[in-house]
Structures are given as structure tokens and as C-alpha cells.
Length: 193
Image 1 (spheres, helix red, strand yellow):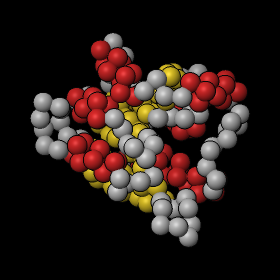
Image 2 (tube, rainbow, N blue to C red; image 1 turned 90 degrees about the vertical axis):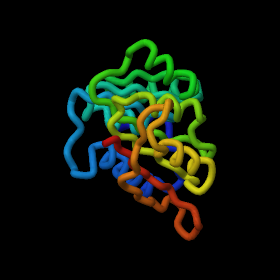
Image 3 (cartoon, rainbow, N blue to C red; image 1 turned 90 degrees about the horizontal axis):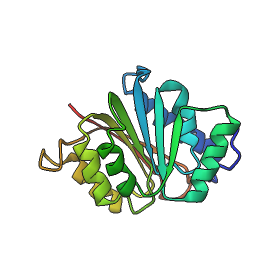
């Protein structure tokens, strides 16, 4: 794949490992390939790297990022790579996700990937994800799992409530993008049972 804009990762070799881990987790721990009728939600997609990598394995990708410039780059990357089954949307996840639900734009098998900033996902986005009972798997990538993202993990896993059914953590994989530092990326996979 050719990208017009960089991966925005200093350690590109480790970034490749990170994307491979994410793709494996999206496909499922048992190694099965995602069904071709699956829709992938790529939340906080940046310039669309994961969306473009996964596009050939799913029916459709809906990718959201708050940065208009990143979404413009993502669209150019999709065009340059001949990828046509990705919809890129500029705006915050907490604003766009409820509109997708209200517009019935998601159905069938849905898998979500979230790779937010250190602040984690907005509580409104977490509430919406919980209400989306058709999401069978959520892969959450965190660069600071002991920070605000921790509260996302707790809220995602809380028992059933008016905020929808819980996601249960089933796998956690650390990926060391920053050798010789105490920091690492954590890929945490949640499923619904």
C-alpha cells in the first residue's frame, strides 16, 4: 500500500507490528477471517491507514476522525490505492456515531476499532457503542491505558444497564513502539457474548 501521508509513527517497524496485531484482533482470536458482510467502524482513523488495510477484508469501512486535514489525506490515500469501499467522515466520534445509528447506516455484522488520543473516547461515544448491540467485537488501541482510557474500559465492561449490553475484555496485547521507555501501546479486545 502506498500512503501519500506518513504513518505518523517514529518507529515504523513497530508500527507495522501494531497494525498486524490490530488486524489479527479484528479478524478474531481464532484466526478466522472477517466475514465479507462485515462493516468495520474505524474510530479516530487519522489518515486512514487501518481503514485501507482492512478494506479488502470487509464489505465496508466507515472511518471517523475529528481532523479535517487527516480525513482529506485519508481520502487521497484511498484514491491513490484504488480503495472504494471506505467512507471517511470528518467530525468527532461522539457526534457522528449517534447519527450513524439514527440513520440506520449500520447493520449486519459490525466490528469497531478505536484508536483515540491519550484522553480516550468521550463518554457519549462509549454510551453509543454500548447501545449498538450489533457490534460483536471492539478492538481498542491505547497509548496510555492507565490514564483516561482505563475509565473507557471500565464503562465498556459494566453490567447491562440503560446504556446497553457490556463488552467483555478477552485479550490484551502490548506492543512496544517506544523501546527503552516505560511506554507501550495496548491493544485490548472486547467481545459480546
